[in-house]
Image 1 (tube, one colour):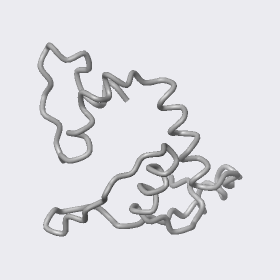
Image 2 (tube, rainbow, N blue to C red; image 1 turned 180 degrees about the vertical axis):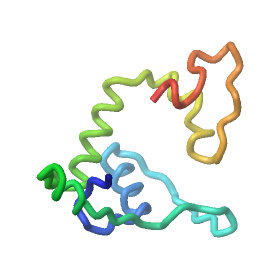
Image 3 (cartoon, rainbow, N blue to C red; image 1 turned 180 degrees about the horizontal axis):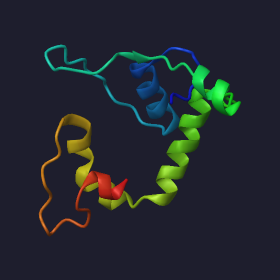
Image 4 (cartoon, rainbow, N blue to C red; image 1 turned 90 degrees about the horizontal axis):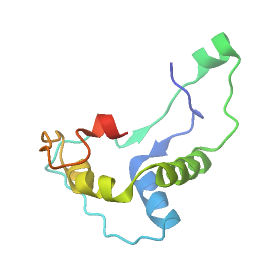
Length: 109
């Protein structure tokens, strides 16, 4: 079941908002030779409205900021740093060695 606002969200816009919100600057370089997912998303929450009576009460970017705040309060920055470069650039995460604190991204998140 999709939950959303039925408003188009461009991935690049979300990335730029995250960077701005956290006070980071980065030069974003499109990589047209790399396969990607969709450039934008639109969710239709009709089924949630019909079955649950649910309607969005928060704008996407407000929820994104709250999620960032929660994530930073509940995750260990050093553990995230171990996998961050790989998370941002690779499609498949290599199996960590025993020396790493986090066994997999799925275990950590």
